[in-house]
Amino acid sequence: MFLHQHPYPPFIPANATKLIVGTIPPPRFSTGNLYQEDVDFCYGSKHGLLWPILNEIFDLGLVYENTNEAIHQRKSFLTGLGIGICDMVESCSRNKIDASDLGMLEVTLRDLTDILNENKSVNTLLLMGGNSKNGPEYFLRSHLRSKGITMTKISLERPRIHEFTMDNRTISVISLISPSSAANRSIGSDPLYKAQKALRKNYSTLDYRIQQYQNFFY
Image (cartoon, rainbow, N blue to C red; front, side, top):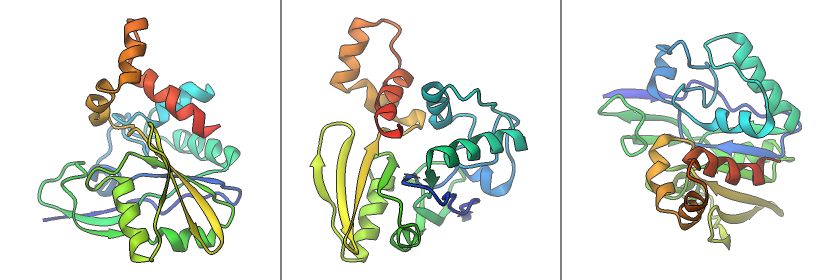
């Protein structure tokens, strides 16, 4: 049994109004066995698409390498826009050492409501995936239920939007399509994607994500 510990504490600038919320980085980020093209920071996997999406939206000129410069670029961008990162999973166990969300066992969640109470300016959670088992929305719902808090539906169109209230404060929850390539099949079945693909032969799943993300990161 492999104990998969989240390698990074939450990164939340003092001016943060939004939090990126996922689950946990791939196990190699916990063991330190990074690839040369990985970045030793949240969502730094060379296979991940979050930073390429943001790089395209904001023209950041990011480097994709295991260097301090790459980390600094990402932290500076997040601080400048008032965006933090706080994944849901603090630790889990795995029978197989891979990055599968479904493979997570004995999950320990971070206390996101306490973290929100410590960061009063945050009013939006940008979830990196939906409500499938062991996804960020799945864990968020479980955590909120344990605190006696329920989410209210605002829009069920993609991306789904909910909100919840705690301590007389309303938090918006946006369930974006996952930046993982595993979500490509789901994108391929989306009528919006199919319509765009019919109009533009070179339209890709990355283009789909960029269109969705840019509406909520600005």
